[in-house]
Structures are given as C-alpha cells and as structure tokens.
Length: 165
Image 1 (cartoon, rainbow, N blue to C red):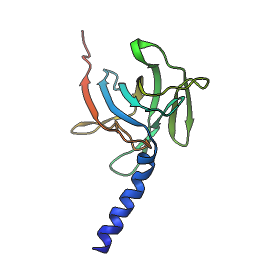
Image 2 (cartoon, helix red, strand yellow):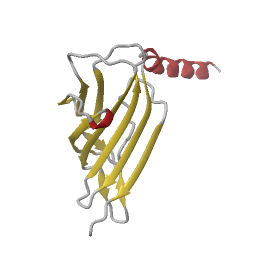
Image 3 (cartoon, one colour):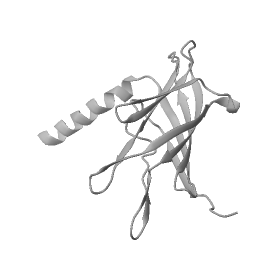
C-alpha cells in the first residue's frame, strides 16, 4: 500500500506544473499528410484558453531527434511554414534551436492576449517516416511531452498524399 501512495504522490507532483499554470489547451487537432517524397506536412490547430491571465502567446517545443526501436537517435528536420490565428491572420513568430529541439515562440512580445485564442501551425518534418524491410513506420508524437499545461482534448488524422495526378 505504501508503494501505491508513493506512486500516486509522484504522479500528483508531476501534474502540479500543469494544474498550476492557470491556462489550458482546450483542443489540439493535428492533420498529418505523408507527402510523396516521404516528408510530413503537419497542420496543428490549438484552441487555447488563457482565462483572465495575460500572455504574449505560446511556446511550441518540437524534438529534433527521435529514438528508433534499437535505441539509436535519429535526427529530424522541421521547417515552420506558417503560424496563423483567427481568419488566417499571421501571428508574430520566432524560431530557434536549443538542446535538440525546435522552439517556436508564437505571439507578440509587445502585446498581451487573454481568453480564447486560436493558433494554427503548419510545418514540414523530414525524418519521421522510417522505411523497413517489411513495412514503413510513421513516428510522430503529436501532443509531445513538452507542454506544461493540460491538453483537454486531442484529435489526429493522417493521410498519404497521392504520388500521381
């Protein structure tokens, strides 16, 4: 019984940053298309609720390496194509690489937002599709493990682009 309470305590402590953050991602929707050249086109729509808290925007962290089943780290390349909000209006965006991840800062450093906000990110990923002797495997951690806020709902759809037209 002691180990169960220790495990529960550890779980609660791990959740505290998300519970204490004061804002949430109400919905994360990802549309992933495998293109004929093997790259992914990812379109993420994030419905964020900051409540009354004032924020400049969000920080999206994406890994620049994945670990294969044999334990080898493989680099991936990510290129941000667009970051928009309501009605396609572009968000100010800064992109930088740090510690094997891509940091996408979305929002205006000079202005604050509150309440419900919509962020639509479009980016290409090279290196997430692995070819094997018997099958091909798509590896992409859609929600990621780098958010410090709760994600209430997530939806993922994937498709393969037609190679010939």
